[in-house]
Image 1: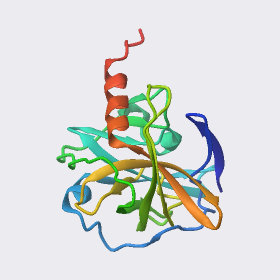
Image 2: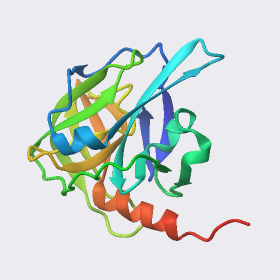
Image 3: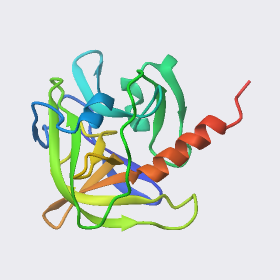
Image 4: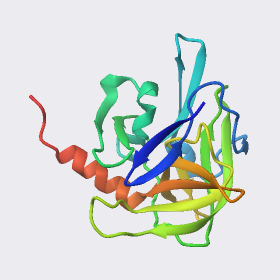
Length: 205
């Protein structure tokens, strides 16, 4: 089951979280990049009165802090939430003490790997190629990039990794176009900037 979201003037088909979603990507025995493997955290929860299971992903990006999509809020214990970005589909929460992986910027034409989960709790991966990098100026027009591949339900909030094993982005949506699946991800410069804004936002009393 999927739902539409609007993010930075793009209307994208966001990843379905319910158990009726067809698994995407391919089964993976493990995450091959050690830094990503240590920082990766699968997400799952019972929804719809406990009749369906939802799945997503998250990854550590700073000491004790992980990120996922804000539309994965039903998969995170509310007491661990640090904050939600106001202008992107990102949510930050307290997590374990693993070392965050190294990051890099996406490069047009490079091969990447994305990781996610299926509703049975099994790891999935999708290979792809970066096909577009949007580096528009100004906070209100978020940098993002697009890669082609077979990521889909369960990859929501999951890491995108380059050939050197560095974290280059966080998946937030997809759409099927011209016989291809286009997957959208926030680049890590944007993700870390959003974290800084959340951490420095005035606290509500």
